[in-house]
Amino acid sequence: MISDLTITRTREELDASRGDGPVVLVPTMGALHDGHVQLLKHGRPLGDTLVASIFVNPTQFAPGEDFEEYPRTFDADLERCAEAGVDIVFAPTVDTMYPTGLDTTVMVDPGPLGSVLEGAVRPTHFRGVLTVVAKLFGLVRPDVAVFGEKDYQQLVLIRQMAQALCLGVDVQGCPTVREADGLALSSRNAYLSSDQRQQAPALYRALRAGAAAAADGPDAVLAAARRVVDDASIDLDYLALTDSDLGEPVPGQDARLLVAARIGKPRLIDNIGFTLGSG
Ligand code: PAF
Image (cartoon, rainbow, N blue to C red; front, side):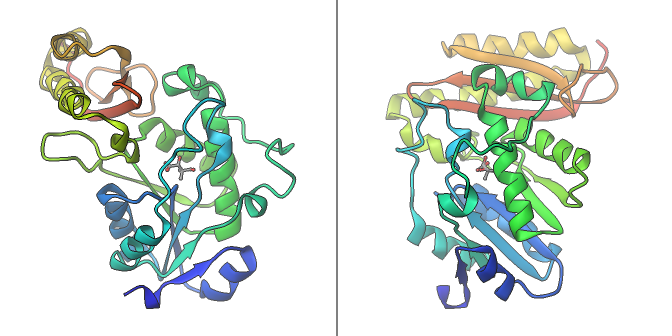
């Protein structure tokens, strides 16, 4: 099954196999699950060549985070890529991505949006994400790139970067894939104990409760969501209501409700979109 898949490690190998037609890139850190498969399936019809990158990016992990333990399942990832119709897997080494070392002199500054929400808890995270995505765009030179809506702030920042730095890449978001009980798929769900796994779907229940109160305005949305997390005894990092670009929410327009909480070892994040009423 994986015989049609070309595995590349360098820019030269990519160039030799990418073809002349439109290229679609799905960047990943591997440990592929059904959420990634959805991204690949979304990307497949958008171009001639579908590239999946697999690279656990050290610069987006702070010291003490789970870079070393992050699940690495390369052989299984190749199977999933082949099943989803990927043409090329790009799996570079750290040296290929950071030829001048990890303290590379040029890093992408995410601007003010990089230090709120996830960025308030992980201050160097988005600098690392945007830097590696910019490098991947430079190496793969895709026409389209696909990212999951689960990491909503990441998606908004990558869109902003592509526009601000005139990268010429169409950045597309893809809806979150969930377990039957609503828990958003994430490679880090593997860290949950069985009790924590029971508790975790309360995050999505809270988002849905918030969305169900949308017609009643911002205060009602936040109160409804908070009731659910309090009932589930979840210790929130944040619960935030924004517009779809993560600015101030505007009644009558598209809004996003975002939540983050540490449940045992992993920090879980999730979000939902809806139209906000004025109450
Ligand atoms: O979402 C991820 O898996 C990563 O942050 C990304 C976009 C592949 C960059 O390393």
